[in-house]
Image 1 (cartoon, rainbow, N blue to C red):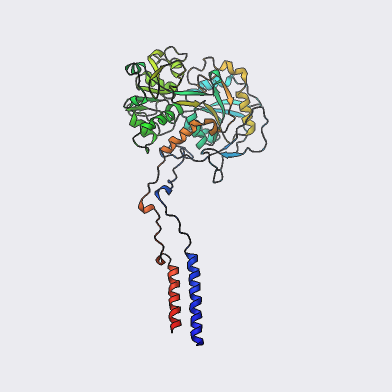
Image 2 (image 1 turned 60 degrees about the vertical axis):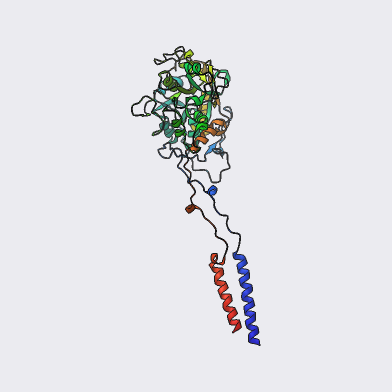
Amino acid sequence: MQIVTAFSLLFLLSFISLFHSTIQDLGPAPAPVTGADVVPVSAPALFSSPAPVLSRSAAPSPHWEENPLPEVQRSPASAPEGVEGEATGKTPQTAPPPQPPLEEDSETVRWCVVRDEFVDCQNYISLLKPTAGYVWKCVQQQTTEACLNSIKNGEADLINLDAGLAYIAFLNYSMKAIANEVYCNHAENYNSVAVVNRKACEENGEISLKDFKGRRSCHGGYSTATGWNYPVNHLKQFAESNQSKDYEIVSDFFSAVCAPSEFEGMGECGGCGNENGSCSSTLYYGHSGAFRCLVEELGDIAFVKEDTPLLYSMEGPYNKTWSIKAIKEFMYLCPQGGCREINGYPGSCILGTVPANVIMARNSISSRKLSVVLQTLLNATWASALYTGKNANSHVLSSSTQGLSVVKQLTRAYLGVSASISQTIQELNVKKVQATPSTLNTVPDVSFATFPHVQHRWMLATLSILLGLL
């Protein structure tokens, strides 16, 4: 009898142990992974290091920026300024990437300019009144990309960029906006417009952007705000697939495209008149270049700044040898339909409002040097002399600039809608991982076969029962 009781107790203890372990093992199962949960494979940054190159499959990456000096008169703080993640507007989840080492506070301010801007830059700095013993000099490069690399490597300090390229400098070159151009009536922005031949408007009074499908286009520059980003933002609505990349959207809509690029291997230049479709020519770069493309009848529509036709037409103050057409031969094209006379005030016939061009510096510029740069740039004694027409060729500042103002916002906040459009276009070029059955983790129905250790304990319990019966 005692033996039977002992085996019974053994059986009872085994069953209780098994039940307790099984309850612990059968915890909540992980949720099945679906296609919506598949995270895209990280793409390389828009410009890679050490020799950044614009990538078709670029994905925007987080960036860290110091706060710019709010007021020139304020003494620079001795402690390093704080950083803030602002490229995506989200709270950063990781520590900020390492910044380049702080520069030795060289008492030379080096302004990087591209190609023929060098002559204008020399005239520009001759009008400045340097302070605190600083010397200003111009550094010439052949492309904006080369200038950005020079600034990143500590070989130059400043560059003036349009909003589209400023976003790239901010996002991928650790740079920030310190001052912006100011235009007529103290405007700190301008309108992006489409300009077409008057004849096209007279033939169709309700003509709109969609009617230019299959025609030829002139863009001032790949990745620039007015020349590329804003037009692409409008052309997206006509794209056959929402998965199309930016250059596919443009090349599928227009029969020929002239969009030179300042970055190696980029641009769409089959419509620039080059036999091999090369983007090496700079004849059609910038607002004036896009208008020239239209004047020379390489294209049927040009995407430019609102005052470009007024400045570079036959009657314009900056007319060139190619300015062989009068302003009356062109009109603003209203994206939603109709045309408007060109008088510098396009009204609602715009693609969008673009923040003024900005002077950029790298984040690691010392507070002392930044303060000196801003004080020198804002010295009003040379402002009136600067814009007298001496810089009528290639401009270190936009030809319609009448002054400068300190950027008191973080760079992405200053760029505003333009930055959002730039980011959206970059996201078009991100290659997403397509979910397939082989990449999805499925969870089978819960059974003892799913938990081999539970199955093993049931076998031990069965053996205990048999021993008890014996």
